[in-house]
Length: 103
Image 1 (spheres, rainbow, N blue to C red):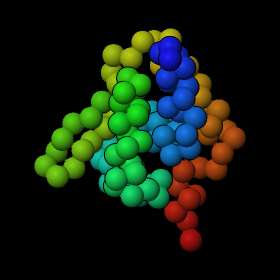
Image 2: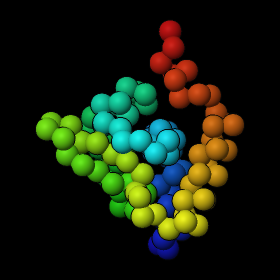
Image 3: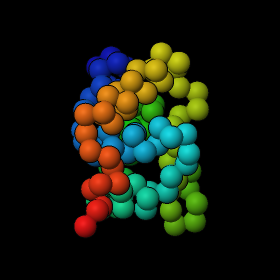
Image 4: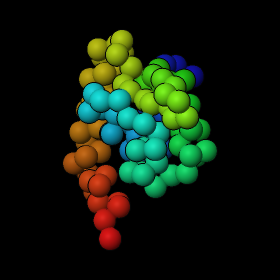
């Protein structure tokens, strides 16, 4: 699979796209935050983040018992623009992530 196809396949899954939407704010996020916002278990979130990491979109850092993720800082500018466009489109077409946790 080409790099482009790998990235598109990684973003095609709703939980992974939601994680990228959160991480594309430029901040580092703990897996516990991702789990809470996306309603995913730790094992499910870890599997999804492994796919995003393999696609080269995110980096991780261990912090005691937690793993923290962030957007890959050396992402190719063209890939970064493409992912940013997908994130914007997802935000325009989908409900806000925080609405998933509303009562």
